[in-house]
Structure formats: C-alpha cells, structure tokens
Amino acid sequence: FSTAAEKGVPSLGDGELKLVWPTMGEVRGSNLGYATGGSIPGATDKISREHVRRRLHSWRGAAFGSEGSKLPHPPAPADPAGRGRVMPHVKTFARYAPGAPHDLAWVIVGSHNLSGAAWGRLEKNETQIAILSYELGVLLSPRFIGKNRASAPFTCTPGAVSHRGESVPRCLCLANARPATSVVGTSKVRISARGDSSPGAGEFVAFAPLPYRVPPVPYAPSDKPWAVDAWDETPDTYGRVMRGGIADRFDASGTF
Image (cartoon, rainbow, N blue to C red; front, top):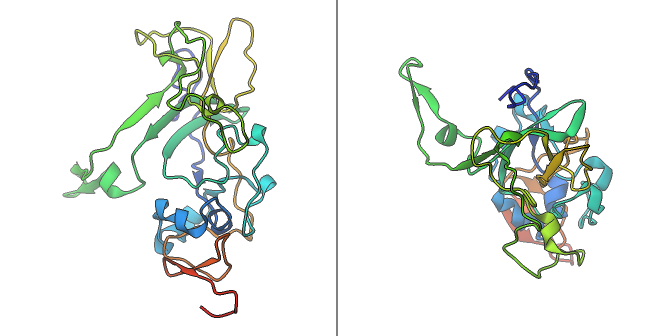
C-alpha cells in the first residue's frame, strides 16, 4: 500500500504514518459531549505512548477550533461530510500524494480497530500469525470505478437534510460512481476528498468524503488526546466532567 495502486502510476514510496484521533477538547465540544467518547475506546496507556503521540492529528483541524465547551460548525468546504461536531467510530485508511493532498490513491473503510485481535499477532517465534476477529473492509482505488455512472448520488435517507439545512446527498461516499465490471477499470479516474474538485479534460472525479481534513492537521502543543479513561474537570456542553472514564454531572453550585 505504499504505491499509488494504479498500473503505470509511479509509486508514492514509503509515507509517514498519520493517525487522526480526536482531542479532549473536540470530544468535550461535540454534539453529545463526553458521552460520545465511548465510541473511541482508546485508553491512556496506549494513546500516551511516544510513538503514538507524535503521530496524532486532530479530527477537525486547528483552523476550526478544538477547544471549548461547544464547538462551532466548521465551514462546509472544510467539512464536506458534515461530521465536524460528531465523534467517530469509523476506521479509514487512505493514501494521498504530498503534491496533491486532496487526491487519494486508495481508501479502505473497514471495521478493523488498531489492535492485535483485528490485525493479528506473531506467535511461535514469529512463524505464524494469530488473528482473533472477523473483520470486513472495502478497498477503493481508481481502477475499480467503472464507466457506468449514476446521474444522481445514492442515498439511504431520501429527503433528509444535514445540520446546516442542506440536502444530505452531498455527504454521500462515491457520489455518482459505480464499480467497474472488470479489474481493468477505466482511464482518467480520480478519487478526491473534496466535493468541489473540478475534473480535468476527459477526467472523472469520484468524491470520497473522508470525515476529517485531508491532509490531516497535527496536534497543537496544548492539545490533549482523548482517552476513554481520562480525567478532565472542564464541563462539556451538558455540564458533565470526565472522571476516570465516567462522565459525571457537574453541579452549578460548585459541588459534584
């Protein structure tokens, strides 16, 4: 997966691993406050490890705020999926080119946590790998997108609108794209993380709206990573504080 995954396209080489992980402030200021952090089950002893901490990137991006009791909605161009104030449970893996960071060489969406149970552990002097979980993932690359394209995006929620009052179809993955009937696919297909990406001459652009910014934004020095067992005395939107993994109600009188 260090390559562009396309025949005739130069390899992208080895890239730096970047982990998108919400900050404490982003969870606190989300639509459900600390309670929504239950969908992000990373513990302090795992998240605080140096090789993890230095790779962390924020969910929203520093330009649109990561602190406060209630986060504002980021502007639509920077939040094409409308998920800036909704905390994730989705697992995505993607590769973009440094020179064209909004263009994606491939995307994987799956159920795989970053755990030994999901990805496997080496055993018996590294002679075998043991995987404990059944997981499901979908790989998308330009050559898997076919010639026959729908005139309108597919939606499971026809007539619904986003929190901005906009039509939900703009939030859909692979708007107006369909799978190729063979592995050969078609030429001049590009996958973009931006919904407003304009196609070039003879080119088709498939919109893959990842729910975070691409390229991701590194943590600021003051950012603290979310941990499901964290302690934080700053109340969220609903007046709750975090105490060792329990979102306790905050009493306005100053007592708990």
